[in-house]
Length: 150
Image (cartoon, rainbow, N blue to C red; front, side, top):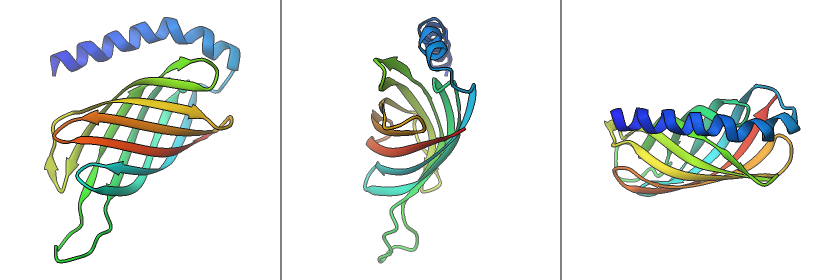
C-alpha cells in the first residue's frame, strides 16, 4: 500500500507541471462530471457503466459497475464493480495516456489492485473513447465511451 501511495504522489506531482500549459490553452472548467457506458473483459465479457468526476480532465475518480448478463445454470451473473482512479497525460491535441488503478470486487470477493494503462482519444469537446489494458487478479481489457458533462 505504501508503494501505491508513493507512486500516486509522484505521478500527481510530475503531472502538475506537465499539464498546466496544456489546460491553460484549452480553457476548460476545473471539474466536470463523467458518464461512460463500459465494456470490460475480466474473465468474460462484462457490460456496465461508470460515473465519476474529472479534475481538469487530468485526474479522474469514478465508480464502475459491470456484469455479464448471462443467465444460465448459475444463480447469479458475474459482477465486477468498484472504484477507479486515473491520471491522464496529454499527448498531442487529441490523445491522453496514463496509469489507471481499480479497487474492485468480483462476485463479492475482493480482488488484488488492478493496475492498467489507459489511452483516451478526443472525439469532440465532451466525448472521448477510452481503451484500457491491465493486470490484477486476472488480466483485463476495457473500452468506454466517455461523456464529460460541463
